[in-house]
Amino acid sequence: MPTISRFDVLIIGSGAAGMSLALQLPPQLKVAVLSKTQLGSGSTLWAQGGMAAVLHDRDSVQAHVTDTLAAGAGLCHEPAVQFTVGRSRQMVDWLVSQGMHFDLREDQQDAEFREFHLTTEGGHSHRRVIHAADQTGRALSEVLASRVAEASNITLLTDRCLVDVIKTGSRVCGAYLLSTEHNRVDTVSADAVVLATGGASKAYRYTTNPDGASGDGIAVAWRAGCRVANLEFNQFHPTCLYHPDSKSFLMTEALRGEGATLHLPGGERFMSRFDDREELAPRDIVARAIDYEMKRLGADCVFLDISKRSPEFITHHFPQAYKRCLALGMDITRDRIPVVPAAHYTCGGVVVNQFGASDVPGLYVVGESACTGLHGANRMASNSLLECFVYAQSAAEHIADSITPLSTVPEAWDDSRVRDSDEEVVIQHNWQELRRLMWDYVGIVRTSRRLHNAAERIALLDREVSGYYGRFQITRPLLEMRNLARIAQLMVQCAAGRKESRGLHYNSDYPDSAAKASDSILIPPHFDPASALSGPTDTLPAYSD
Image 1 (tube, rainbow, N blue to C red):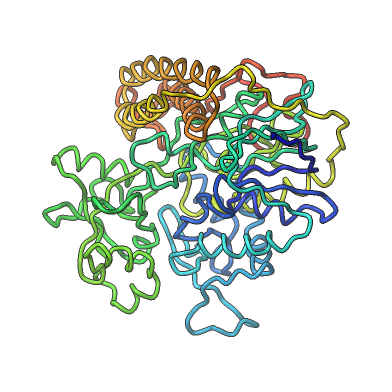
Image 2 (cartoon, rainbow, N blue to C red):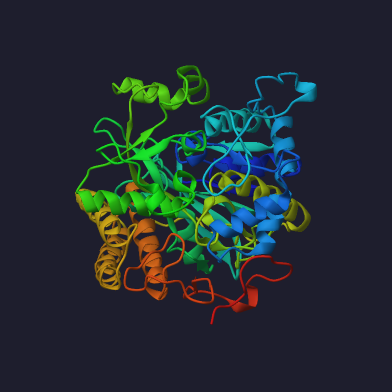
């Protein structure tokens, strides 16, 4: 039987943002953390490179801010960048206090006088990426998951998917959750709901993201009445391992930070023709260069070469990459690594303020689902984990200060008028069509005609999926397809409205950047100006033109 549960705070998502927010809420609050599968199964687990932070006296907050603004191609909101970078050392200290062990310099292993081993990545002018070998995300996930499991005020809700949030008037009062284990929809009442569901890179045929990256939080927030912004800026990571037996394995950017070079199949280096920074140019430039060369030559991939570094250095700093490639018959201490670009990060998302608060009272959005103003038109490498922790902390502080008990009890889910489906193959077909369509028409290089055709075809898919959703019992594939069909529409709408090329968005019909940078802000049908963002905000304007 469906159930109605009650919590003070419901957090949807168990990655870095969701778990760290839960841990920083007051212990007297009753908190639930939802995960699609098991705790810590989000994109954080896959993060290899590390987290950017100002930790050395040769570096500075202003240098990190300047680098971020440059990578964001004129679209970052400087107050948001200052706010995020200014808290970086504080976040590192908090993580260490939770039990996180980052790599130390080999000549300074004394924890009392520790100095972290820092690496560099594309767009950074200093070594400032703190890491745990090339498995930083896994290490962070394990530490946070263990702390969450120990917390007496936190309940774990695993094997559940978000259906929609529930509102009473203009305010959120809970959510409907699908239990995939019991095949039922439960109702959860909560005074505050946090969406920490990650990005939407699963909209693309090739992606570095796990299967759960289906844009659920963005789509749900849109349906609830939240504005979204800058969804045309989809970051394609330049170097995803290209091998028939490897699914979406990322070759960390830290490889290039430590000297790895990119080569054409014939052995020639090529990045100097595209940017003076060569392999350490921002990701949009490197991905577009690889895409151009692959199309020019008709090549299946290009190659990444780290073999000039010693085998000892490679196996010590990149054990995960070494072991993965070795299992496929490649020894990266001497062999070149075949790589291609793949959809990696959603830079836009739900409009929030510096507390992660959205346009809908009681609804917060943190992590990759949010548009904070930090990333602009292109996320600089390793700023995403930093953003997760900074905004999770500020959201936790805001919830603790402002949470108000609600007397409203949400209505239970009603599925009395739907039936079991005998056409689930339709969802799989639609899923494959959408991902191919987005890759071919809304990929690294776009045209206005492709975007127009994509909009028409995605609208048909969205109508078909909406009809299916209204008639049949819901399943996880149906929920994800419903959300991604909506996200794809919003991505195309943002892209079609941008009559320029900037950062991650390149339209060959408009190859130049406009003189003035502006955000692509979309307003949903149920937007309520009276309850929209108010108070201090360092991100996006309250209304679009």
